[in-house]
Image 1 (cartoon, one colour):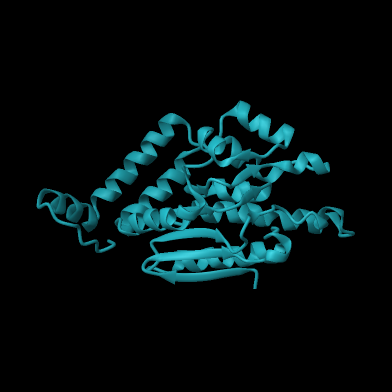
Image 2: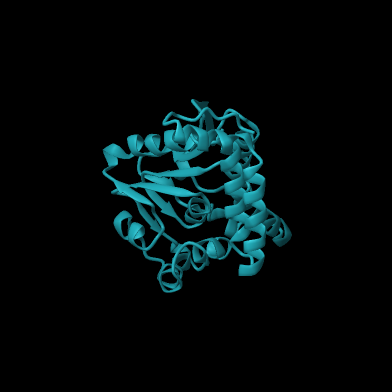
Length: 257
């Protein structure tokens, strides 16, 4: 197994665990990651997903470079890249928030996976980059994800130069949400995970769906779509409970409906 899955107290932790390849994104690892995410989506007890690495210094080194030079029919290579499409769509449609715990190098395709998630908390020694150009490749499959998260000029710089940037700079340009000392990374991620797990699951699901689906809509179309989601949210018991709890100065008791 190249991916470990654990769930406790509303938090599913999915750990990339193929240290011999520095968690290279092989077809096997990607398939197991997709299965793990599908399990988290199907489990009503799971409120938030944390994506982590079992490697001390690397979140993931990116794509398995051996696959580029392998003597494999081109159509099979094309089919293999569909896993990235499925993965990005699955993360966007998970209905539950996702946090990346970046405790090491987040490179190439792994940067796309991290940016497809909602939040990234990084240890101060982490680094980020798209070094594909240095080996005669290009980050085609993650380009759309990066441009939707990072400004155009900085994205151009990452893609064309292939240089790594540190966690502090990654936070400054919008890749990372929060940078903490390495020895505080576990606690910082656990704190955010607990906060997210405490929210209404039905409202979170509606909100996550809206966040994903409106991002590429025309403005007027997005407004109509979001208005319909607001109406649906107002029909839930949780929104009534949340407002009632606010005025009664108590913690809400979510029913998930």
